[in-house]
Image 1 (tube, one colour):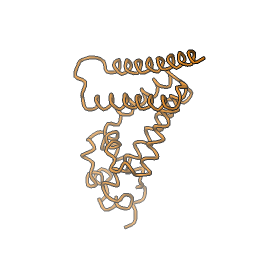
Image 2 (cartoon, one colour; image 1 turned 30 degrees about the horizontal axis):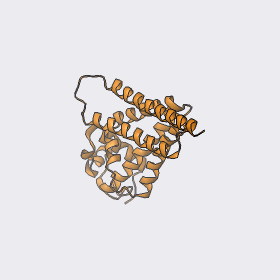
Image 3 (cartoon, helix red, strand yellow; image 1 turned 120 degrees about the horizontal axis):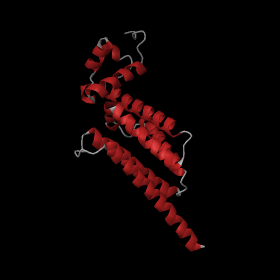
Image 4 (cartoon, helix red, strand yellow; image 1 turned 60 degrees about the vertical axis):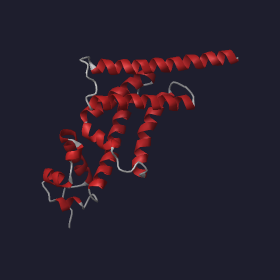
Length: 199
């Protein structure tokens, strides 16, 4: 079957993202997607090899979009300003794309090389931001894990309506980032103290 003119993988992924974000990832099927695109379901097979392949492509697409967002947010910024901008950008991305974000976390094969590559690029962006603090290789990795846990944990809890008290979530998030940055400063001070004692 000849592919429909104007229909390509990027168009399919954009339509899938919109469906996932507005209706939920579980509502995305080949039949529902085909209906949205006003095509017959078999036409999708010219671009994707079934629903598992679509979900994998959607996960890769999601990480690509997140990576671009984080790069744009942090360019020209450093240290605390970069961390705060990165955190804000991450939260805005998840809030704007709840279905896409869930699809990213549901990726079918964590060993997939294409998926691993873009995931690593996203993590490397966080590492580059935290490298500005000169914490040393090990502490930078620990800090990266900590910041990723903060961002994903807060975003996931908010997405699942896990915060029940009537307090401003943005204030809570900013406070959490401030606590993280205070911890970074404490690590730096302890490192300087250790260097002084060695001297």
